Image (cartoon, rainbow over all chains, first blue to last red; front, side, top):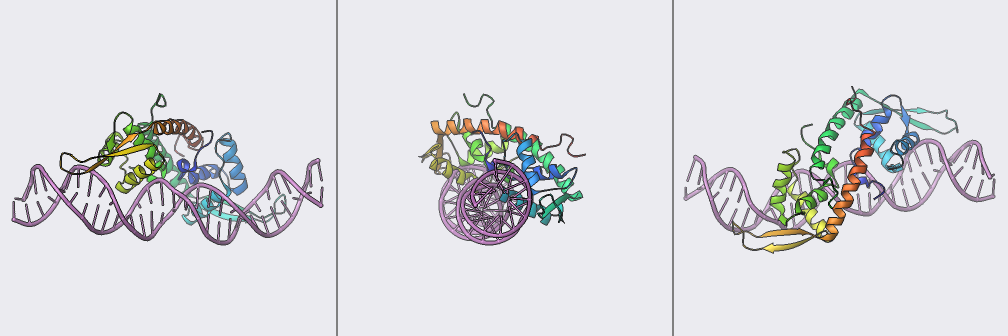
Amino acid sequence: MSSISSDIIRGYNDTMILYLLWDAPSYGYEISKRIKNLSEEKYVIKETTLYSAFTRLEKNGFVESFSENVTINGKRRTYYKITEQGRQYYREKCAEWTLTKEVVEKFIKQDGGI
Amino acid sequence: MSSISSDIIRGYNDTMILYLLWDAPSYGYEISKRIKNLSEEKYVIKETTLYSAFTRLEKNGFVESFSENVTINGKRRTYYKITEQGRQYYREKCAEWTLTKEVVEKFIKQDGGI
DNA sequence: TTCTTATACTACGATAGACATAGCAATGAC
DNA sequence: GTCATTGCTATGTCTATCGTAGTATAAGAA
């Protein structure tokens, strides 16, 4: 069990992305690398998961996208910017995380079941 | 956000059930009530979720079922008993939880994003 | 006596987030 | 000239959870 199964983090990918967009807009590839780095390689988001998360976040009004045509490699990038609704949603997820943690830990043996 | 959405707990229902079967066999309705009580009403597992979890757990060899024909109300109950593989799986999930918690918390603002 | 509540499930189809696989296109390193 | 890196998009599959419904018994309220 050296990495995290996606079923557990399910529902928190959106939250992680919003966290990384908090101070400045960013784009897929960069977000992906920052998740990997911040989690110390313990969690690596799949590309399809990431881009489908962006689509969902935008549909829900939590982010707004804009294109930058000029990049280092001449490639098109789609940047995402968090909205006020996105910040509100993030706050709710933080509160929910606290609650979730409390509940789950009632079912976790501290000694790991020895 | 007074209760927990199931997408977050997804993948941990099995773990919660195994925890409750640790010391003695039990059955659906009882497990359901114990989850509700232990979580202080913060999490109420849906019946269909619970029974499909039992089926999955048995298919994976983590529990074994047996029937008790005589019950208080004359109704049939299916009891489930945790297996050694089930205990092992539970231990792995405990370890995974620790890791998951560490990772997720890197993306959670302590001030809740104020 | 009829109705509701609690008990104890089973069946079936829908939903949605995550994933596998594949493809496209440009640049720089070797 | 091939490979790795960058930066996406398309399409279909998987599966845990959920919504709805049905079945059946017993106790207690109306």
